[in-house]
Amino acid sequence: MEIYVGNLPWSCNDQDLVDAFNAYGSVEKASIISDRNSGRSKGFGFVTMNNDDEANQAIEAMNGSDFSGRALKVNEARPREERPPRQSNW
Image (cartoon, rainbow, N blue to C red):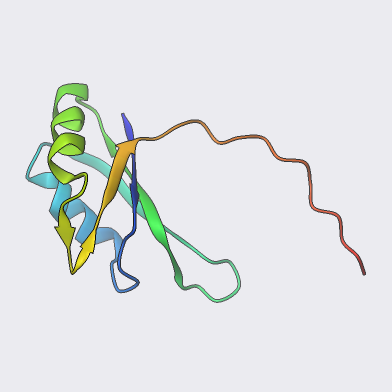
């Protein structure tokens, strides 16, 4: 199951996410989304857990919990919405 994790502190890295979610089960992958140009975190990321029961338990426990002074927003990730390509005004 793919899990969305929002409202992350800017200092958080992929390993911090793995460590936080490992308490609830096996984490296959964790990644924080960063800005293409600056490389700075966008404040959200995704965690993949193979066991749905463990993933649901992690969502329940982590949603609203304090993580480095910020209340996390955690839920099952939805598929990415298709958006029209950006039009350049150059």
